[in-house]
Amino acid sequence: MEYRIEHDTLGEVKVAADKYWGAQTQRSKMNFQIGPAASMPREIIRQFSIGHLANRLRNTVEHERERGNCQPRTCYKRRETNG
Image (spheres, rainbow, N blue to C red):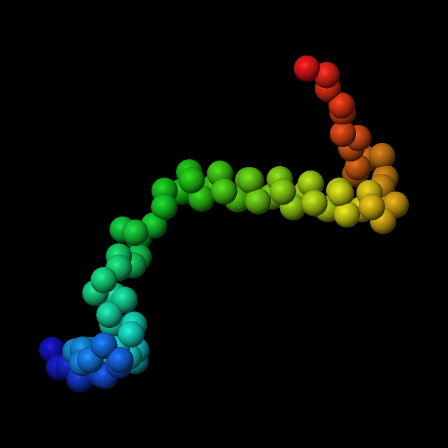
């Protein structure tokens, strides 16, 4: 395999000749896991997305309530609970 020498502030690094990236990307590839091996399990990603969706819905309802555009089906009343 052929290599070319790329330079950055940390010095020289060998990059495969057929790659379009430079020295900093090559250093990242050498120092960090990239790709499926470094990914989070699908279950965790799904739970994050559910949490983000719930927050978006809540913020939308709060925004609509502040603007006075609440419809009974789309806006909920926050219940006050004692204890």
